[in-house]
Every structure is written in structure tokens, then in C-alpha cells.
Amino acid sequence: MDALQIIAEPRRRRILEMVWDNELSAGDIAGEFDITFGAVSQHLAVLRKSGFVDVRANGNQRLYRANKQSLGALQRVLETMWTETLDDLAAAVEGDET
Amino acid sequence: MTDPVKVSRYVAAPPSVVYSYLTESSRWARWQGAQADLDARPGGLFLMTMPDGARARGEFVELVPEERVVFTWGWIDHPGVPPGSSTVEIVIVPDRGGCVVTLSHSGLPDDERELHTTGWEHYLPRLVAVAEGSTLEPDRGPGAQRS
Image (cartoon, rainbow over all chains, first blue to last red; front, side, top):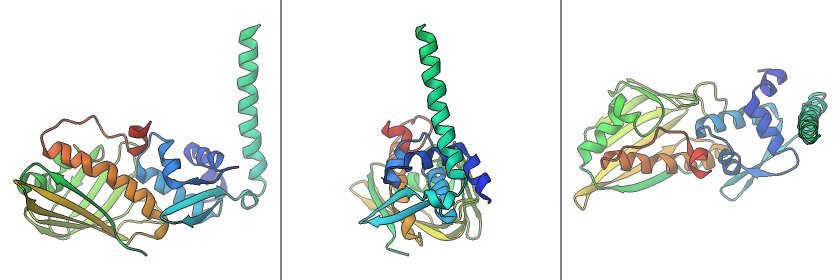
């Protein structure tokens, strides 16, 4: 699977967004989604294998954090996408108020 | 590799009933997944499709009626736990008019222990509930229950 295929999947992008600036456990991540543990486990495994997330052990937990460097140019693409979504939302809200 | 993930629960139902929920496709799907395709004999297919499309696949290894079911387990298109890479053993022991069901999932990589523990801790109580005669809401996974 190439880098674009990996981030094309919306749930994997959402996982990356969640662990972009925070370290979260696999359980925390799974709790955010209305999907089964199989699907979460699968997405995390793809992200681990690609190196887009780093994982470290903390007792029984596995803690995840995005590895931004490993994404290369895609780091900017993702950050822009998330910022623009927020900007669009802000603009829509402001539009409603006027 | 590490110790098996182990989850155990008491069921107020006879071992034969619990066994039927582990070996009959339509009964399995009442506690886990949207669909199960089980060919419950040694070497037979184990295929379970989650409501979100994730599919667990393996092969039955051992079946002892009312006592024990062993099958291999993995997720299709999963680089960490591919089909056949791990083993699930479910043991049923008669107890106090019902039975105790113990599920052990061995052969999982360390990184997968936490999520698979969460998963089985979500599903075993559902097996208990259906075996005791309850009708459950369709499965949506552990995250759905927490929120």
C-alpha cells in the first residue's frame, strides 16, 4: 500500500489527526469510533507498518503518536486539509450570523 | 509474542446451548459480527464479517461437543494479524447448573493485545446474554457501546 492509499482512508486520516499532537492509547482511539475492534486494529497496523505512527509500550497499553517526518510532503497536505475544514466551518458559522 | 488474552464469564445456560452459539453460523452472528460462515469441523472455514466490513478468518482446529472449540484467527488485509496467525480456544466447564466459558486468544503480537482484550471483553458478555435467552441490539463494536 503506498502513502496516498494509506491516507486516502478517512478513518486512518482521523486516527492520524487524533494522534497528531497527542499520544493516545489504542483503547482511547477505538473508543472514538463507531467501528469494531477488528477495523481499528487493522487501521493501526497499517499506520504502524508505514511508519506514519510511532508506538510505545506503557504496561499493557500501547501508546500511539503521529510520526510527522515520515509523512514527508503529505504532512503539509494533511495539516492544510484539517485547517481548511476548520476555516470552512468558521466561515459557514459567520455566514449564518450575518 | 506474549501471554494469551484471556476472558472468562459465567453463563446461566447449559454447555450444549453455549456450544451451539460457537458452532452454528446464524447463532454466532447473534453475538458477534453481522454475518458468520462457519463450517464447524476440523479443517473447516471460520469466517466472520463485522458490521463495518472487517473480516476475521481462520480454520477450525478442534471441536469437542459441549466442551471445547479451537480455531485459528486473523483479519483479512491486516498486516499485524493476518488469517491463521493466531489461535482462539474456547473452553466450556459445567458449573452451578450453568457453565463457565473461558476464551484464550494466543499468538497475538504485543501491539495487538490491548485492542483484542477490549474486543473480547465486549463480545463475551454478548455471548453470555444470547445464551441466557436475551435478544441483543445488532453489534456495532466496543466504541459504539462506550459512547
